[in-house]
Length: 613
Image (tube, one colour):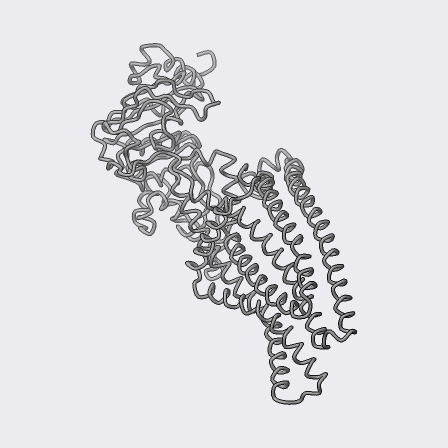
C-alpha cells in the first residue's frame, strides 16, 4: 500500500505503459493499429476545422466564389462529417480492443495464480485483496491505459495545432489560454491518484460485501440462513460494507467536483477575457472576421482538448496505479521454493520419512507439529489418530506439499520433497480430503476432474462411480451422467437440449462422488483418505471402507478418521498428541498398551453398548 500512496516512479509508469501496449498489440494487433490511427486523425480534425473556418469566413467577407473558396467549404463540410462520425467509430473499435485485452489479461492473470505452488496465499487477506483488484484492473486497466495514453497524445496534438493557430492572432492570448489549462491537468492527475487510492482502500470492504451477498444468495448457506433467520443480519452487514465503500467514493467525488468546478470557472474567465481582448483588437482593424471566427473555434477547441487531456491523464494514472496490482500478481515470487532443476519424483519404493518436522501456519500462530518423526512405509496402510487439532490434516497438507515444514524435512524415498517438481509429486498422489469440493458441473465431470486425461473416458468414469457405489444412481438421473450436480447454473446447452436445472445430491452422495474421483485416480503411489466416510450412514460407511480396503491393497496409504473402527485394520496406527507421535502400533497392540488409543476406542465403543452394560 505504501507504494500506491507515494505514487509510481516514472520508470515504473513507463514500464506499465509498455506492458499495456504490448498486451493490446498481442491481443488485437490490427484493431489496436486502427485505434491509434483513428485517434491521431481525430486529433487533427479540430485544427483543420478552425483553419478552414477562417478561410471560409474570410472568403465570404471578400466575396470570393472561386474554386479555392468552394474547395474550402467542401473540405469544412467533410471535416464536420468526420467529426460527427469519428466518436462512434472510435468507441466501437475501442470497446472491441478492450474486450480482446480483457480476455488475454484474465488468461495471463489466472495462469499466474495457477503457478502458486502452495495454499498459504489463498489464506492471506492482503493477497486476496490484491488479486481482486488485479482481476478488476486486468479486465479494464490495460485497455483504459492504452485508450487514455492515445487520448492524451491526441489531445496534445490538438492543443498544439490550435495554440499555433491562436498564436497567429495573438501570442499573448494563446499563451494565456494554454496556461489556464495547466492547473486543470495537474488537478486531474492528483484526483486520478486519489481515485486509485480509494479503490485500494475499499477493496477489503468490497470483498466482504461479496461474501455476505453469497451467504444470502447461494444454496450452500440457504438452509441455515432461513433456519436461524440470518437474512436481516447478513443483509445489514452487506449494506454496511457497501455504505463504507460508497462513503469513501462520495468523498473522492465531492473533492473532484469542487476542484473541477473551480478550475473550469477560472478557465472560462480567462477565455472570456481573451475574447474581449481580441474583439477590441479587431475593432481597431488588427484582425479579420475570419481571424475572429477561427479564434472562437480555437479557444473552444483548446479548452475542450485540455479538459479532455486532463481527464484522460487522470484515468491513465488511476488505471496505471491499479494495473500495478495486476502486474504485481504476475510478478509475485514463488510462494514455495522450487529449484531451477528439479529431481524427478520416482515411484515410491521404500516410503516417506518425516524428520524432526516442526510446523506452524505463521510466526504468530501456535506450533501444530513439534519435532515430528514418522516413517510411512511403502505398500502399507498407516492410520493417523488423535484429538481435534493434533495435526492430522496438517500432516496431509505437508505430504502434498501445500506447505513446507517450518523446520525439518519430509523425504520421498530419501529425496526431500523440496527437491521434487510439485506437479510430478502430486501426480503420484490420490486423495479424498475432509473438505472435498462440490463442483457445479455434470455428474461425469464431477468424477472426471479427478484425472483430467480421463474426463471424456466414460467407461473409466462409470467404473469409478461403480466402485464408489454411485453408478446406478447417477445413470438414473434425468440426463444420466450429463445431469448438472447443483442448481446454481443451467447446463451450458440447456436451451438446445431442453435440460432443466440440475439436482442436488445428498451430503453422503457427494462424498461418494469425491471417493469416485479418487478411484478414477488409480495406480497412484500414495493414497490419502482424510475422513472419507464422515457423511455416510453406518451401512454405507461399512460398504465404502470395504471398497477402500480393496482399492488400497498393496498401495501406500494414509488414513484419517475419528471413527476408530474404520481404521482398526490399518497396518500401523499412529496416535498424535502435542504435535508429535504419542503411540504407534497395530490395533491389538495399542489396545494392550492401554494408552490414548485404547481410551478413545473404549469411549466410542461404549456408545454402542446397552445402558448399564
